[in-house]
Length: 113
Length: 114
Image 1: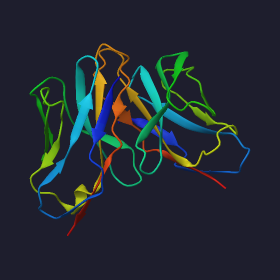
Image 2 (image 1 turned 90 degrees about the horizontal axis):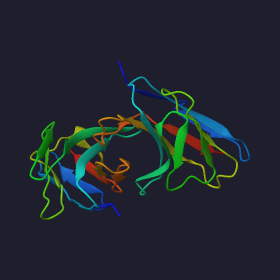
Image 3 (image 1 turned 60 degrees about the vertical axis):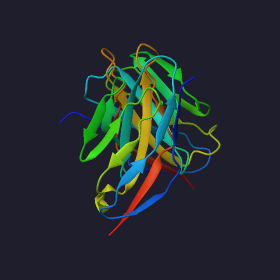
Image 4 (image 1 turned 90 degrees about the vertical axis):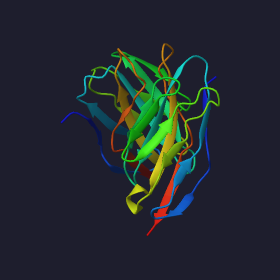
């Protein structure tokens, strides 16, 4: 089956620190990979995505590279801000299958001034 | 602006009562989903529908019911059979064809059982 494993949080950083949130996956078939962000009390929003191996998704200073050889899609940002405090979800969707996304459990990020 | 609207944002229920959460989308998406979110547990799929008049159980369908009479609407009923209904409920939609797997979410509905 399909599964997504994320590092457990919370991740606590000072402003301007470097961020990495690890995400690994198992999938039957060829998945597209996603990072979603959830701010307190809100729904999820797509942050970035990658649809094939070696693709790099990027948005708002965040980046993630689709690594097929290591089945990973780690989220990175060079300098976090207080406003980046949120919960981040890694997800996959196997195209050509049921198209039901599989989500990780989410990683809470707390950024202090 | 296109999007997904969930209502109500907050809802309180007495034990033994059924409640219905509304989800409407104007994105012309074929597929719609309901997720439940509890602290530290991520998202769990309750029901999904890929076309009108058809829906499938997700991982935790017991105690819930849905209907999909219109493409735009996918209401969720939390029945009295759901033993622990207090949670944050999220509705989402995605394109049917081509389906990129990307989900668009509503703002969520927080249900509290008193």
